[in-house]
Length: 193
Image (cartoon, rainbow, N blue to C red; front, side):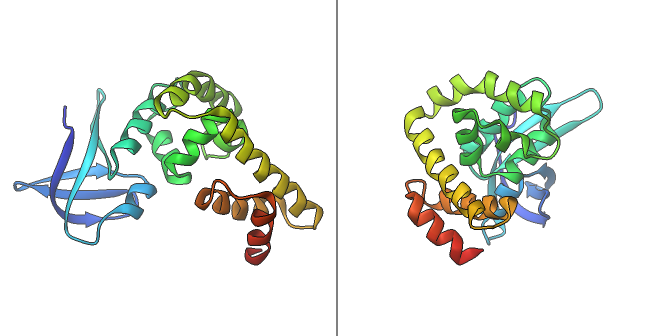
């Protein structure tokens, strides 16, 4: 119903904004990803998704159209509501969510607060084909990158680094350079650990 809202940014927090559009203030829920992309100007445009329930009409806003599409896709999964979908987009970059679903990485999806093993598996089962088709991904290349990441992680563990800490650092490195070799991932990780 409401595709986007453009107007003056009146209020801004990491989880919501208020946009004044023609004298009407629209309260819009946002993810941390959208928050990080908000322009410094006070005039903004957000792509929106309106959720209508018996007791509330809730607007969700996104700087990128692609993030809105991922949000809608996540809503189609049984067990994932708007607040969990927003948490997913706040915890991981949209690209990371797509990649995790494409390769069937249950651990990454399950690492998000509010998502259990069954919901993570259901999300992957329901969305994997859609994601591969929609984003024209080649499963083999994604798996290759994941292998490099996994090898680097196990090497860092052998060197005595905390698995959780190493995982965070390696995820950041792979997010910035998805073609990084095992050696370059380890070298960059050692600088940051």
